[in-house]
Image: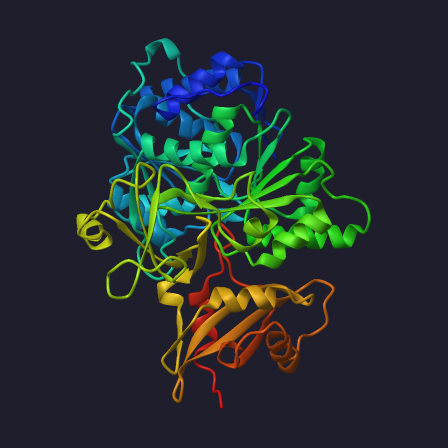
Amino acid sequence: MAERGIVDADTIWELLAARAARSPHGPAVVDQRGARLSFGELCARAERVAAGLLEQGVTAGTVVAWQLPSCVDALLVSLALARLGAVQVPMISLYREREVGYLLDATGAELFVTPRVWRGFDYEAMAVSLVERGLRCRVLVADDGLPDGDPSSLPPPPADPEEIRWLYSTSGTTSNPKIVCHADAALLAGGVAFAKAIAPEAGDVATLAFPLAHIGGADQLVMTLRCGVPQVFIEVFMPDDVLPLLRAEQVTMFGGGTAHYQMLLDAQVAAGDVAILPTLRMMLGGGAPKPPAYYWRVKNELGARIFHGYGMTECPLVAMATASCSDEQHAETDGVPIDACEVRIADPSGGMAEPGADGEIEIRGPALFRGYLDPALTSDAFTADGWFRTGDRGRLRVDGHLVVTGRTKELIIRKGENLSPVEIEAVLAAHPKVAGVAVIGLPDVSRGERACAVIELSSDGDALTFEEMQQWCREAGLMTQKIPEQLEVVAALPRNSTAKVLKHELVARFGSREYA
């Protein structure tokens, strides 16, 4: 474990205070803007921001939304709200007026913390427009400086780990986002399990390539505080811009997803024999399927191992690869269920699937959310005996490892036969011309649905023909029914902030095309 040792706590704030007391001078966080804080400085500065927010009327239970890129200021705002016991609503920066307005209204947010302009978008103007249209919410522009006050004015920190103090939201790609209620206890359970699985070593330095406002940001934060591992925050992951910083900070643990794996692999190919990240030993991923080919490429070309996991907004971590996993387990599975989350597989009849059989993944345990803000959604999401229906499909292997095979709604039903997009994607992802792939089901008069492969070509790859694609699938041993009957090539697959492919956009784009 990290040389600064393990600390434990019952709340997020208590965890920060314990870490700051144990290693006040240990490096905590660095961002692309040049901000750099030790754990002692992080704790002290967060207390000053908390005191400044208190002067503005933020107290225990006040609902505060924030939409900030992954930088030190975002971390300070979040930790300051944790110090006050406020209810915080983290929002990813991709959200725009529809999603932001809905979340501010539905949560009853009294304060909205936002940048002025970031990546060419005027967040302040959006916030002002929402207020002018009747939204009752004050706006605080973080670019003007975070609030600053006297920490001696602060009341005692919150002590109840089961109190709802975090309102995360699902991506809301096809409807309004679901608002997910979390307590510190659940975030700690997931984050501690994450830390135990990856087992940081002395000298490790981590980086966060996805939004801090995402539920995965909580896993990374808890790991950082528990183990004393410094974190390098990345606002936008563009390899040419980011790699010099990661090399300078000697990053050993890269937190991202499948799309980030590919970007680093492309950068390494372009660099030839010169290692782009010579200190890298571990890539930590989740949020999207990981074709097995990525594991072997990362190991062979980047000299690191992928530790892939499975979680969701409703549960920060369900399963995670561990240091004791074999290469085969790393490549072919999504890890083992964590101690704080039980997993079972339900068959279509509602009973339990046989070991190794595919079905819907159901979970329960202390890492699970405490319900949706809308009680009706909560009642629909749980079984009669208290298990959460994830909507994901998978199987538990005899070695205890979980394999996630896709979303229940993404299952392709071709002539009455169920096809798993993840299985087909894993085969196509291994093709040297393929940088990214999504397999979708499209309406088909004679088949019910047909499988369509949407391909993003590698940077140095030639065009992939339909015949090549089909031959590759046949040689990989896919049965004929699983070989895609349509091929589309795109410049870039549409993705959300966690690099998950937005398949509904592809269905809308290609589903109306004539097909013989």
